[in-house]
Length: 177
Image 1 (cartoon, rainbow, N blue to C red):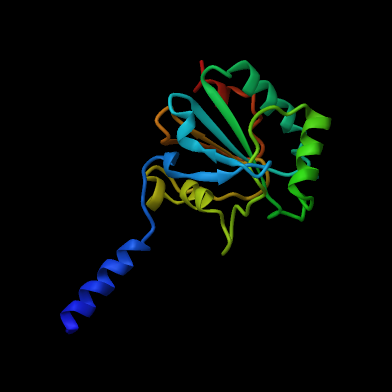
Image 2 (spheres, helix red, strand yellow):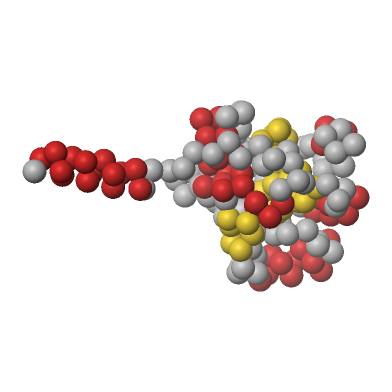
């Protein structure tokens, strides 16, 4: 009887064990509109994931992100992830954030629902992005808004860029040319 309980417990724990993946394609996130964004839908394109905020000194980077998205649309998708982790700089609802992004910066790239990018309530995608033990490439610390994570055409993490790296900088575009 104890063997049966042990085996059942072992099988049960496997069912709830986090699935490790060397690609981001296993992630599905809620879109800012309430639908789903399945990262596997972007196979064959690079993906630039950015934690964003509407009341930050870097908020002007929305314009550069939109320019990057439009210029490289055939080979890149930009996805914004609003987060309120730094200085309360993204206090609004998803609806308010979407309105701000479209009216102030004419954002057309996909936006996810507001998430947490650090701490105990970190979104699973950002946990994957920031931990080498999960992504197999690098550890990254998100120190502020507008950190950028570039994934290759196969969903593997290529590089992390800090807030001060502008979207249209050579640091990023060299991966796209």
